[in-house]
Each structure stands twice: as C-alpha cells, then as structure tokens.
Length: 276
Image 1 (spheres, rainbow, N blue to C red):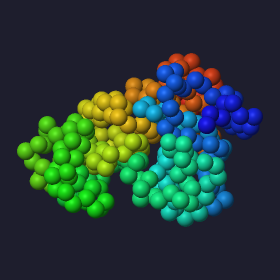
Image 2 (image 1 turned 30 degrees about the vertical axis):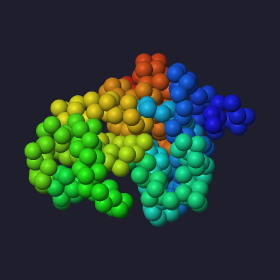
Image 3 (image 1 turned 45 degrees about the horizontal axis):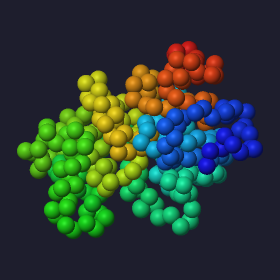
C-alpha cells in the first residue's frame, strides 16, 4: 500500500507528500502505516508512514531521543516487552502485518536480523557464535551448519581473516571483527531484512569503513535499515534517508536530495549542524 494515493492527509508534523523512492519500480519490502508509539502516557512516535524498497539501504537520522531506534525496533517487535509499550497502526513485511495475532515473534525474527550498537559476541568460539541461531532453531545436520557458518562469515567479509581459527574465542577478536562476526551470526539464519542500530559508533574509522563496504555488498541480497548519528555515513551508505525529530517524520526521500536539496528548513538545519 502506498498512502500517497489515499485520501487521508498526514498530520501537521508529517511531510505533505511522499517522494518518489522507487525509481526502478521494485516492490516495497517494509511498510509503516500511521504508526503511533506510546510508553504509558509518553508518545515516542507520532503518526509516521513510510515505505522501504526491497534490496535498498534506508537510513534513519535525527538527534538523540527523536525515536529512531524505537521506530527501527518495531520491524522485529523488540519493543514488545518494554513496560508501557503500546502501538497504533500497521507494520507490514512482504504485505503481512507483523503485529497480527497470528504472527509468531520467533518466526518473524528469523526473517529480520538485528545488529546492535556495540558488538555483542557470545563467550563462545567464532564457529559457535555463528552456528548459535541454527542450533536454537533445532538444526542438527552438522554439515549444513558448517556450510552456513562458512558462507555467513564470507558474506560478512570475515572468513579470510579467521578461517584457520574458527575455534578461537570470539571475544579475542578486534572490535571491528566482532561486529562483522555479529553480522555473520545474524545472516546465518537467512533473514531477508537486516536492522542495524548505529553499527559503527563503537568502532575506529578503518573498521567503520569495512562495515560500510560490507553494507553496500549486503544490499544485493538483503533489505537494510540503519540508524546512524553520522551524517557522512548516512550520505555514503544509504539510498533513502528518513529524518526524525521529536517523534515526527520531518522528511523522507532520496538520500542525495535530502543532503543537497531538502524540502524542509528543519532538515537543512540538522544536516548542516545548526541544531541537534
């Protein structure tokens, strides 16, 4: 569904029109329809609607506390267990409402991988870190597991660095390697969506560059949504950018346009560092 053709008008905090986000006429992988999020009486997200194209990279930007991570975590229902959480609206993945009562959250999270701000490898070997998701799903075929581990490490551009040390403790890896290991762990269960919440904020510039290169490669197979405070990173890696401010979607569109010719003064002020 593309709300650009509906009669319902966005609230005053919303953009007036949706930009053309889909020049190659690809299908929408993720869709948010009139999303409100509350924590008890506090409203964290205010009537946000947007569509995310399949096999694209979308960046969420905005100052701290604006709702970026809250909105990101709606796509794998990680807010569900937070006290006071309540949501209105619909989140669709492949045109299915993931908040429908028939949806099993465990099954959803096989399709929607998550990479966090700080690398969080388990205190296990490199191999067992990547195999973990498969094992908890009940996979017993060791040959299959081994193939998935190797394939996932290759996808995460880590295998060539550690192929002779798969039994090594994951916590002994460098910070950048640990983050790529966490990406490999997310990829092992073959998700179609990858959520990344500030995945390079704890890394040095060289490691961050490797993660950014990896994100570009992964777009060929996955739909990626990334939260970042780094304006240069958003401009480098994303196809489309959403600017959130105080729970509102201020502007959403093609990244190049957002960073060179935004429609909203507030967007211009934020990306040029005049506030935020």
